[in-house]
Image (cartoon, rainbow, N blue to C red; front, top):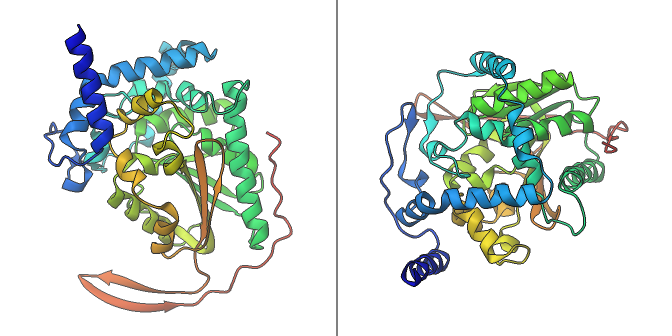
Length: 374
């Protein structure tokens, strides 16, 4: 027994000391999945995840239940015969059958063998979302803490809009919307918006999101698409929000997503990134060593995320007026703005063609008022 304990501790220390540095990994063939070398985690992570992911998953669930999060109750309501039938119907409506999933998206993460491409992950999404902010603040319930996190995000957006005298966002996209919790907050925060849409790569998550919207009588639309190449029209949105997604994808995918968001934004539109503060998490400033390990063993690209500066990535994607602020003990908010005037290169049939596009600058809109009393 002492031998096995020592072996586990040794692997754990090795894992934390070298991070994601081992190349090459064998992955199973999955239909409709496209693999690229930069998308794959190292062999060491795959071995550790395969061995310990269930242990980490059980720990997260037990921690949630100790904080009075009714995990089974929140999950089981989606498993009733009637609701399951409705979810399957929504799945058929929402699924884009033409999508080819990136290899990184089909790998096991969050303790699920197929990542977000399964009903269990979708059914547990609500409980997992509430448990996300467990222990963020002392003597604060998880449900209240989760609301604080969302309200802080709303406040950062409101401050940026007012500081830069920007128009009230009428068309909003929630990219990587998961089961729609963040989309619902945007709906309540921006009641005068004309169009609020959620986009995600998991048709399972989108089915639950649509179910929640129907249940709450919310006018929300959900889109099944890849954030790297959505296929949505150019210059469609005043604001694109991306919550807790970029730490789950490879660096190259992050670059592609930021470029796609830039394309989707109207001139003067803003990008809002909400995600982990790399320095605070990596240096154990806010979490215990075991909790950090339990998290990392279910996140194949987290070490790559630690190594890159989000502000610089936004600047490299041509966003300007980039600001970064602490949102809560673990997460940060980055906000940037698309240029009012731009000169873009288009690639068509393998050739580059320059086209100058001139736009009027955005003007102050006195209706920038946010309902953050949710």
